[in-house]
Length: 521
Image (cartoon, rainbow, N blue to C red; front, side):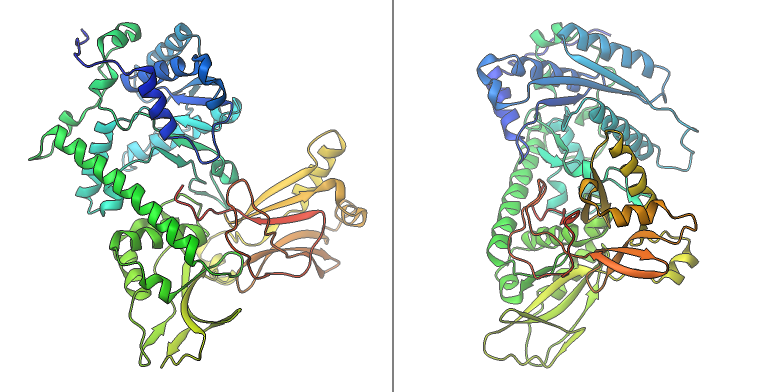
């Protein structure tokens, strides 16, 4: 197939440098960056532009030092292996390291399964594994403004709000993925990795000026453009692009407004919960800002994996609207305010804030406030199902974890030169770290000399906030070893205000930290 001669000016080095700077992760650039290289024109152009950018000696200290080309051979089309080979050869011509991962299907996706969703999930798992192999924290995709327009139109056709219609972000956290058994797909590693899209401001045709096309020597047969998106559109392509750019900018402005609200209005609370006053909520009048604020809190508190649709309450418009209607209802002396839930496994409870105390009620009736009292809302984890209900529904009890074997195996590996730290993500919300070099000998002896399997090291939920409690069960007797939650900032999220203590028992060989960010990314 002959390539078209396109009459657009090439993307200059300075232009791409600005694009790349725009999608810098909040934590900055790490040494290695990957490009999701499908072999199509978009990812090939991105690989070329990024390679050129990283070759500029003047910018060595401002961005990654090495780029890798990452390709997934999904083995679902006759040409997939040939395309993967093409990707490898193109990367070699640029002098870029390349990795191909072939998806090994136990069985092809069933005809009644959402084929694209299954293939996409497999592709992301393969990309994540290659990132781990090459010590890559950031992955770049070649999505452009026409992809953004298509995403926006599809979401609008599904009834999305302006927030959804804003499309993809320049930079976002990879996230924890979906639940896989009793844990999330990517866990804490996914919270420290980033997806960036440097080309979101440019059109598809801008990526293929004649001089770069001649370098790439690729076919355009796999490309998809907005002109192929069959939908009755009254606007021109340029008007659509401009509209989506405006929506994207508005979404960023809304995120900034939510940040400002949270920084000035968030109140001290217990770990794993969120508290805000009714007065602060009432200052937020813009409906889109209210939606974004609710989604931010849901994602922060929810026990579903961070970044998943479930953590956002499914992003169902009726659920978000219900939460907004409840939180922003006018409070009078005759008000009857009820505790409620509307998705994300998050419980919203009306409270009265009195000095440094939080007075909780399942219902606030005939609200009469003393001087200095403030009505507010607390968002917390919804109580889990009982053991009987979990067993009846065949669901795992993710809040009760037997760490005995994990600790014993890790201890033996450490004695043979392995890591001295064991990390466990609990309830998709807390990071537990066990420092084996500080673990008391009586505990390890208790766990190892355990022929009857009577001794166990358990992580159990501590009501009412379901914070983790590390418990030693010895001869059927339980002893709490650790239930404190550290207030030290993590690499993921700096705690904005002092929190109320959730526990009083601490051990120097165990550390518990909250890991969910309240930020937009």
